[in-house]
Image 1: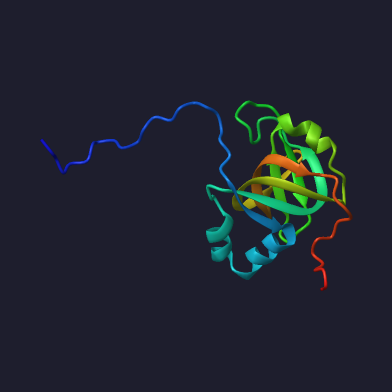
Image 2: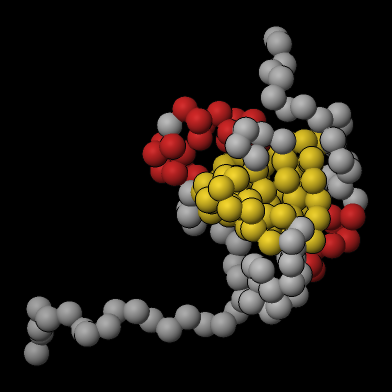
Length: 160
């Protein structure tokens, strides 16, 4: 017998195969993220925030520090934060398992980090916790792609 009724639950249980990184869809300069946010916050959210694709961000590293233990990870291990120069600042929360790649990053040099954009957050990460009132564009990093870049300052456009 054919029925028009939907089953009570259409959610299938997920197999526990660990995180699967979807296809990389967006590559952007960190300065362009800040400009996009300042120009139109709704458009920024539509383009970048909480999307099922990763974003490669290239910019100048201004800070690298450990967060307070358990602040962002469920395993209680302290994570790291990489901040790139932009207005507003762009911060990447990076799992401790990427420490070796983080150690190769250099201050005031270009780096490329891949992750998921969480959008604008009402607080920014600091070594001791979250500083409320100081906004930042937040990413969950999944890969440090390149940390041996040239001189920083990606805000300046190359003239052709």
